Image 1 (tube, rainbow, N blue to C red):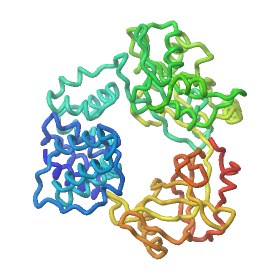
Image 2: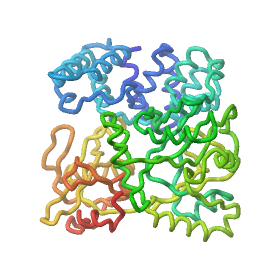
Image 3: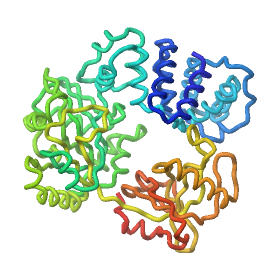
Image 4: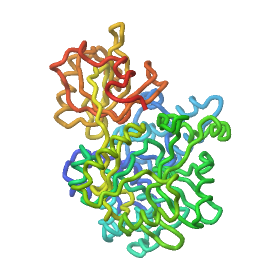
Length: 513
């Protein structure tokens, strides 16, 4: 398939807000794609490269390259070029990456070049989300969307399922079943403002500690144990203590869902970033384990022995989990069968969880089945919401639906000397109206534009919500905000009223985690 077709559909999907039109555009494209390329097409539209990050930045991507006069570049050729990029290493690597990118862009027309630059930079955001693409696959293959959804849930890969279904039709769906050793996408939670709100929505529920660690799925089949991340990457060799714990459990065959954290000498959780560093591919695992041992706490079980438990209600899965995993390796929880009578107990449980250093609580309907890969309303997370008033230091031109608009904001806090220190970036939380307004305002404040980033006078204040603060050597203060999103612009505030770096470091708006 020609890349021009993918770029065209990406652009058209970005330009329409109607979900039905998005589905129709994608379905037409998927039906026309060779079955062996359907997975690639879906990945590209979602802004993902099967090979992972190719190791090229805007310096390489921004070099002017004369576009091709007519479309000839294929999806398969792009895939081969990206594979070549990921294999480049050693002396002269940068020059070789530049050569490969120049060749790829030189074979592309103007619209294809724009799509390729966004794809290679990880900036494709045109609204072709997995849920819409899943519906489109079902339409293109002539199969029920529910069947495709369950196949993806069990297999973990929409591109892989799409390739099979588009090639073989409905019979292909039967080949996707839950198997030990093949990870499934984790069930996700939505957000509630308070424990009371969550309990009112859920009815009988479980209130659990929400641990801020690495989400893991642990598969055991006899002596073979595999540990996967929430993105389904295998990290067994990097977390040997988790594999050892799994082998100590009484079951010989199971799939567990849980969280890996590390505790300090006082039994409090250490910052997330220290735990995340344990999965670094280049670490000496033995040394890392000695320096920062971790442990797993499990909160769900998806299969035991020859039984698949996904469709059982949570209360039954909890009973199976309790038979398999000792209390010391289970996430602490409170069963609230009577939400009205137990509301105070649930709020006290939340307060105790926060005092223990964890980030909040999860409330889950005791009747909920395990809907892998779904963010429904039967699991709800409740966390303290922190906000800061920060100053915009720069903004990046958007892509896809945000082409022509200043989107990704560079955020700064006040330093003691009156300057501003960058704490991170975010494009989240911005509505179309907010994007239009800030583009106009930031153009008025612009001091420079290199075609990708617009530097501005530090005068616009924005209110930012965030989940916490983590250490980061990328930024001058050594910290950055976790999951930052824009709440609103604050043109009513002067830059001198913005929060200071000292305020952030002191944790007055949230603990450094």
